[in-house]
Amino acid sequence: MSLSHIALSSGRSIELTELRMSSTYGGMLEGYPCKPINDMKVRGLQRQAERAFPSTPVHLVPPPREYPDQTVGAFGPVEVLPSVACIGAFRSTSVSAELDPVLHRSALTVVWFQTALDIPSGECADLALRSLRWEELAQDYEL
Image (cartoon, rainbow, N blue to C red; front, side, top):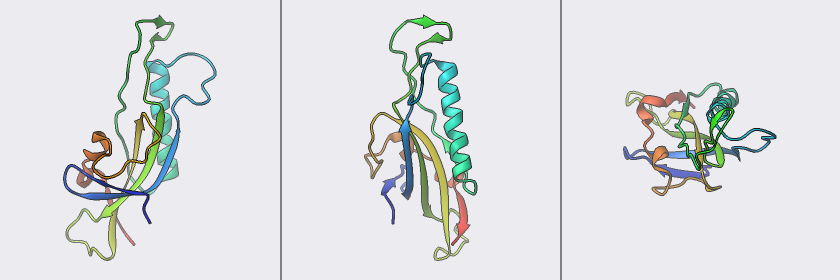
């Protein structure tokens, strides 16, 4: 059973089968959000996804970065990522037309950031998720 379905811009329907959400800056004890910290957070989340789903390709949706003020500290200007870090396992029909649709599916693990604790769904899902190039990124597998 899936958590939700997303209609990609290409017309393909994908289903979200697992979702892991965490606070982007949860556990940050000192310092401030800046490019070096954010780059570490993005790389760390991507590595976490690769470890959690080793048999599935992982795709990172580049996160939007905001610069709320002109304050420059020791590590550069304040740079803020969206507050919710997400790892989602998605499934769909097979990419290859030659494969038996009864025996094969395709899978992709996606890493992205969002502003709210919403489960992406339907055509209301973020444009970055709906714009996934599934046929290029996903991998077919046998049931």
